[in-house]
Every structure is written in C-alpha cells, then in structure tokens.
Length: 209
Ligand SMILES: Nc1ncnc2c1ncn2[C@@H]1O[C@H](COP(=O)(O)OP(=O)(O)O)[C@@H](O)[C@H]1O
Ligand SMILES: Nc1ccn([C@H]2C[C@H](O)[C@@H](COP(=O)(O)OP(=O)(O)O)O2)c(=O)n1
Image (cartoon, rainbow, N blue to C red; front, side, top):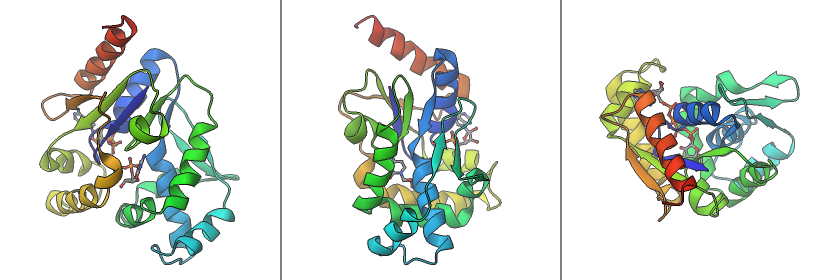
C-alpha cells in the first residue's frame, strides 16, 4: 500500500502507525532523497549539477533500514538519520529530487524490497508502485503543518510555513495524488484519527468495496 502527501502532512508518523498495526514494514522514500542531499552537500556538489550529484551518490552506498517505529539510513556503520532532518537538508532536497538520475537511484532501492510494505512519499502510488493494493494521500493547510513541524525544528512557525509553501511548489510535479488514492485532510484529525481512517480504508479495500 502507498501513503503519499505534501510536506509535513503526517506521512511518516501515519505510515509507522499503520505498518505497526498491520505487522509489516514501511519505507520512507523521502529519507533516501534526504540522504542524497546530505551526500551532495558534504561533497560540495552543485545541487543542480546531476553529474556531480550522481558522482557523490556513487561513492556513498546506503541502506534504508525499514524499522516500523521509524526508518533509518545507514552508510556503512554511520547512521545518517539524525542529520537528514536538518534545516540545510530541508532547503536543498527539492533541487535534488527533480534530478531524474536521483529519482532512479531512489526507486531502484525501493523496488528491491519484497512486499508487503507501506511505501510513503510523493509518487509512491503514481509512479513507483502504481499497482499497490490501497493508496492514500495526506493533506493539511500550510499553517497546520508548520505548527506541527515547529515542535521538531528550531525555526519559528512563520519561517517554517514559508519554507513548506516553497517546497510544496518545488515538489508539485511529482506530488500529484494518484487518481485512485483516498485523499485525507489531516488538519481536523489527531494522529490516531488519521491512522484509524487509513486502516478503515485498507479494510474496505480488502473487502472489495
Ligand atoms: N494528525 C496529526 N495531528 C497532530 N500532529 C501530527 C499529525 N500527523 C503528524 N503529526 C506531527 O506532525 C509532524 C510531521 O509529521 P511527519 O509524520 O513527520 O510528516 P511527513 O512524514 O509528512 O513529513 C510530526 O511531529 C508528527 O508527530
Ligand atoms: N517519493 C518522494 C519522496 C520525497 N520527495 C522529495 C520531496 C521532499 O521535499 C523531499 C523530502 O521528503 P520527506 O517526505 O522526507 O519530507 P517532508 O514530509 O516533505 O518534510 O523529498 C520526492 O520528490 N519524492
């Protein structure tokens, strides 16, 4: 199954809850885009130069560890995860995510994982796993998302909201919901409420309704 949506709409938290309820792993595609961004930044690559970015990726084999309580990304023995949610990665990741070679690098890693799993990101239901059993797309207003993210970032809500709107715009091309996705506005719901809606949708799907 797939859970896509805009930035900070709750994809990782909801995927983790749903995956735990179903007893299957979840895969965070965004973490791989974030790892690619970290490598490019550390190699001082020009983020718009696909050749330079792919050269940086070529020297950094990574492993996505699909833990249900929260995915981690490893480079040999180095756990990259804490650095992947830094403000510098937030700011650079959309430039990296438009590069077709980077998208192929991410998708190849995702497609190696044997199902069943919950895949979350932007284009899981449209491009990477178009034949997924059940598809969901999470939204919420920029203000709601910024307030939530402000709990985890040092910046104030206004700065976070402006950065989210900018990233929504830059990510627009790959962020369209699948035609067969169930769209959930998470604004009025708490986390358990969203997880409950997704699980109910999965049950309906299994029952063939
Ligand atoms: N429905 C919700 N109600 C309140 N807080 C939420 C809800 N969904 C997610 N959050 C919180 O919002 C923040 C962003 O969620 P996250 O799962 O990281 O989103 P994404 O993976 O889409 O970026 C986290 O702090 C998370 O705990
Ligand atoms: N399937 C995906 C997943 C993420 N991306 C890009 C777009 C996002 O700005 C970044 C980071 O995504 P991630 O889901 O980790 O983070 P946010 O929820 O957007 O804060 O990666 C993408 O282009 N395609």
